[in-house]
Image 1 (cartoon, rainbow, N blue to C red):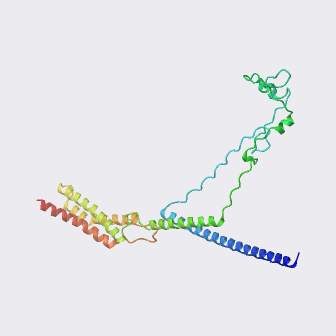
Image 2 (cartoon, rainbow, N blue to C red):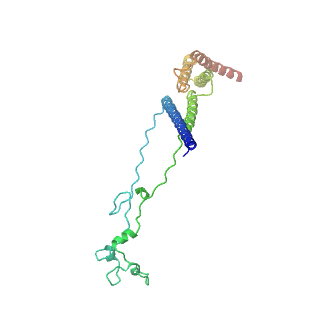
Length: 297
């Protein structure tokens, strides 16, 4: 080998060595990036699990019970003479002789040997199969082995790319974050009139309770007209009783159905406004009734 060839070979080996080092460095950097991505996804999933637990506790949903473990499938029934549970029995040719169960069960040909196919009913004219010794029969006949026993090689599963799997996991985590944000927005809305503002909701609730109390006022007026209720009782209910009932009814409705599940503390119920509405609506309903009656007369 000449010096030029030796130098060329040395340069080639040096280039291969540098390429190997670069490949090892790139592989190490890729593994570090993968480990960092896995740690980041683990932190995100942990935070998502904690947030979902908070949402479940806020809306009163308990954690689901753990799923039962799937039952193991029953293994293949092992016949007599099998070595392992996963393998089926081998097909052995019955030994010739009088002590063999098959020889006793199958009619013979007259020479003390089983008739084989010729002894079967409806198969006249068919010559008997040649009988082999027991050892040769075991070598000649195949052995049926199930795939569960390991006799049949299974196809290897293709190795998944870690980067692709991490990207899929990241997309699923993003989707879970989006659904979690939507759940939080829904949890911040009350069940009663969720799209309304708190002030408009309070006005509507107190006005509705006052209107219901106004209907009761009209019933009391009709009862007073037939003599079932006296004037003092009617005035007490109109001026104090029914407005107070309407006010406390609206207060309880706002506290039960007007409170979002995820809002800390107690939302405003606008007590002065509710008191004013209820104590004005009921007397106004009575006054409107009197004006209507007088107008009809």
